[in-house]
Length: 218
Image (cartoon, rainbow, N blue to C red):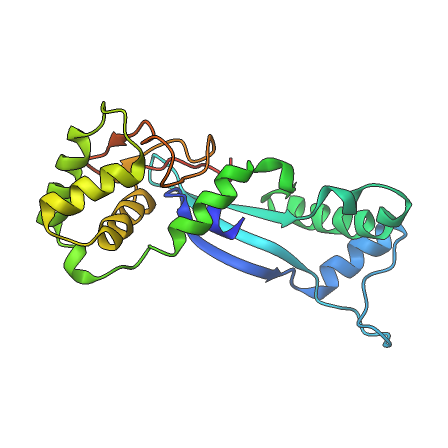
């Protein structure tokens, strides 16, 4: 989920394990529901509850909006063993409602496996050699890549052709390809299929300016 948030152009601030303060608020909510407030193990001291992600997004009109997101596996929300988890989530929900902040639970069902796989790969290429990140060189790379768009070749074959024309190694060509996808200069459907060098070159668009392709908060 962190990778999805980091990749999204909408999200301008990510805070993890955000504390629900003051602690007295969650204690009061728990009491009103007839529930026990979570405590530190082996003590009578109430814990400071947290929400997994507190996100700030920038909207089209330039304003900012906050979202709270809790991450759980679906199996942890079902069955008899889930009762205590659901109780704590109810406390969390009411806390955020009182703050006027949109809160919900995110499970693994929100993500396709190709998306998870692809973002894991692309994140490794968020920073590459400065010599490959020169604007003029990036434009030249994109121009050659665009010229190969309609050829029945694999991604590896396309990148080898680019490396030959631009006099760079295949490894550098692959690194820049992934880097430009991460930075949204190359736009494609990351949720549809895994990025694999041996597969046909996927459908893509070349983007003149950055634009968000993954929206997770709203």
